Image: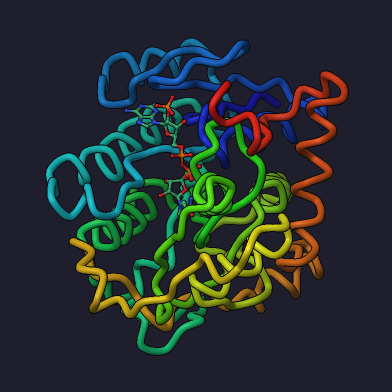
Length: 310
Ligand SMILES: NC(=O)c1ccc[n+]([C@@H]2O[C@H](COP(=O)([O-])OP(=O)(O)OC[C@H]3O[C@@H](n4cnc5c(N)ncnc54)[C@H](OP(=O)(O)O)[C@@H]3O)[C@@H](O)[C@H]2O)c1
């Protein structure tokens, strides 16, 4: 078996490559703008280059944890959002299908309107934002084009150690370690999801030959400000530096689901306890960071303290 991970320089992609290679699976990973050793450059917006890349590697399994993930950016530039999150993955997936490859796409709870979360896979979607709409359109078009060669993993609020240090946990660390306050929405609720667990489950579902939509997210729901306080306390910072404000006070360009999140009953039935709770993953976060400092474990991790040096 040969696997490819498009967007291997990102947080989910980094863990996917790590886990696939740990299992002895021959894996090629790509980056777009942030190079790491062992990854190949690929801009999926260049459709000819993307098709050539697939033809050269001929993977039987393609993971696509890539795209344009800046929700407010997508709101202001719908054409770019649609190209990066729909047209580019569709082009690459079709190139893979010519060689019989199966395709794993990453979607979001932002396909729902946040009135009745956490939502099941079968609940009717109703996106509030350009990002959510484009991801939903991609889900549908990929499914139509690929049939049972398509696995869609919906996830939410991905956290954990990663090498670009961009996720919310790093933002909390960056602000609070400097004694700065951080304003967070108090009325947006979802499930924080541990990146390493998401990567493992992605691989298990793909290797089991599953297709269609699966919710892969953490087991507990938190508001964003309370999540920030939990992270602060765990890392020894003053939780009162997290200031909760309502979404309407924040004037974010894109509307967010408020009562969001994903119901993971289907996943729990297939792989019980595969996703760790907030307290469990915060503990593991620290262990992984210290591991990657102590020995060359090949982990896709930057220690939060080293962010400025990364
Ligand atoms: N993070 C979350 O909370 C979350 C929640 C729900 C769904 N998702 C979905 O999960 C996927 C991955 O998320 P993530 O948090 O891992 O994202 P991320 O850390 O921002 O990584 C995105 C990856 O995409 C690559 N990329 C961007 N533009 C590209 C292009 N034109 N050609 C090829 N590669 C390109 C980036 O490469 P460079 O960095 O090298 O430029 C990077 O490797 C996305 O599809 C996102 O919608 C994420």
